[in-house]
Image (cartoon, rainbow, N blue to C red; front, side):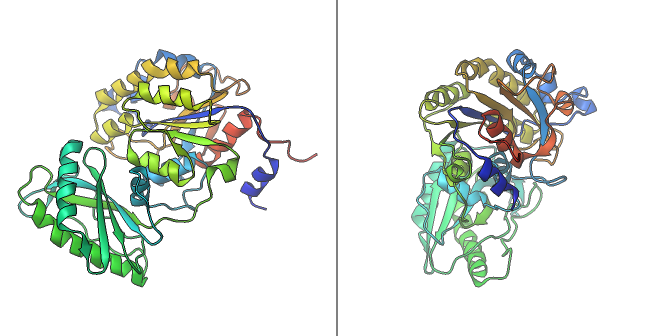
Length: 406
């Protein structure tokens, strides 16, 4: 019997409510340039501090030691799905988050506009984070010019900011493929290659190569978004729903499509309409009457970490803290606050460093620690655990498990 089967046998109904608040990429590292402090340590967070003193703390390994996760694996781990067992392409997540009705066999890619120089070298992987309006205009242009490649339909839909989705719909298509994003500036757009050796993957690789040949000339001369990069090229996998695994009716409150899509993939209901953290908290509080599990996602901490902007990441944490009393007033029975991974400012990207985590409930106990920071979390009773076990701690705090054994 595997561990999931053990949990399933112990699982009992509960009337408790659970909230997971994810500060995307909040984990960081202390370096001399930042006064040997992380953004969590440098930020003024009176509300998080007060909560930390009454909670259990620890750190989460997002996938496995040394493995740097994407946002998909990072969130799947938080939802209790082993990222090494359930691999989901970012394109699928983004497409679902944009409300696209995917069909069996569709291959999706998460794309974003970039800036290319005259030699085709990527000089800005995010094209200065162009406004959503520009992305919508350019996606409409590409969609009007490229509707089919051979026998395959091409569907293009704008997302938020510089991001968009490309869906290939036709016969005999299969993922995954490697990214065309070279990973950093100063290199040319990479070639999408089959991750395996199937005919479907090879067909998609040719489709993507042809798509670039058709699309790049259309974007030529448009600054700063005159190119694009594609990631997470894959098809939708089979995955059990959140309700099936945990007997919880779950809702998601997020602003960015990718996180809505990931939540939808595991059967959560998307609660739409938020544009900032206060609106997110307001929707989460309202959702509490209809759902017993609410996931709330906060993006700015990750965005500023990727930019290497230490002061902005500090400010984003402080803005979250200022709004936190709204959520605390809702009195969820179990509240967990963490990140889906670390995005250290010195790294300017995701990393393998364990992210801090806090769990508060009437029976969580207190570790007597002063703040929710990386250093304090190192001394917490939760220790360092794999992120996939967080949901089990939350269920235990909600009294959802019977005693194991005599």
